[in-house]
Image 1 (cartoon, rainbow, N blue to C red):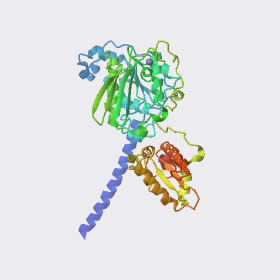
Image 2 (spheres, rainbow, N blue to C red):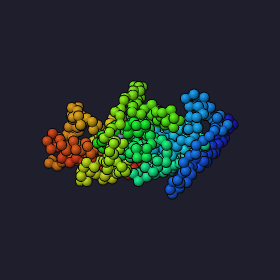
Image 3 (cartoon, protein in one colour):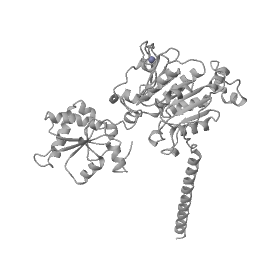
Length: 463
Ligand SMILES: [Zn+2]
């Protein structure tokens, strides 16, 4: 019995210590996040004077940069050039984080960091300068600046917690020697490129999506600009963002590092490797390939002989899409062809017979789904996949049994954000017209499953 009493007493002590430990951990987490709190954001970025040329390296600098100083291609002269160089980083995300990290570590004199967005948990898998303590709380430019100062306090970091706009871009770009486009959308790419042409700055550009990446240098030493290579923007609905298509963090990391390398070579006077050439990276196959780009176009609207782009314009209108990679909202349907998630919830609660069609790719359905939904990917509808059509026909027949004779079966289409669902409604409507499927009441659910998670069911996963 004595042993039993001792066990109980020890258990009580362990429980007490665990409680104390948990409270200590909580206090430590709070103290750490307070320590990482970036400085308060000023109302307006302070204008910064140009960097003075540097005459010599200090003893501390020689020690710090010793491994790169002994490279004959770089040497003291190259390091002094880096120290006097300034680089504007447009976008502090998956590319901008590794890029800025290596530029700061290598001793680039000043880094301008542009990002209007906030640190988000769902981006930390690739945006490696930001920590979870600041998720949802800090602007990415400020978070990146704080992290870079911890890495190398000698580097001047100038955060710009704002979107690059046609009103600000030319002036901002002109204040830096080299520009790195780490943005995630087409309008910003045209904006940055045109601003670089107007301000006479070289542009190191990279992008990454899924398992693929690209890198090139624009407007360097008579080389082509972005418009020379892409005179017209792609149709807005063909552009896939990282939020839609996914991306592996290591892929953006590799591209960001390659981008840093090109920036460093330009800033140190070694010259870039990818002016007029584009590097293509296939991460699944583990292959790099370089293709030659066509040279500068004499008729280029920006850098040609008679340029028509003499001032920055409205790039969202030019590209027909927003200068952001998230919440791209298509408007393919009329309001009466759509229902809100709250209306759908009401309908579900009142047990109205209907069919819910989830048109997301299988990989997303594996992450989460509404249990009563029928899954047929949009691609299968677009390709009129025979097995999928059979499945849909059966589900419609079954759901119809609950509907009064002569009445239409309501079919609701859902996806992640409410874009693909609209495309699917269009397809189903065209089939209804031809009476292929006698489905007359097809609507999509506005905002998709992410709206469902935000407004109806907080326990539903967001991704
Ligand atoms: Zn051009």
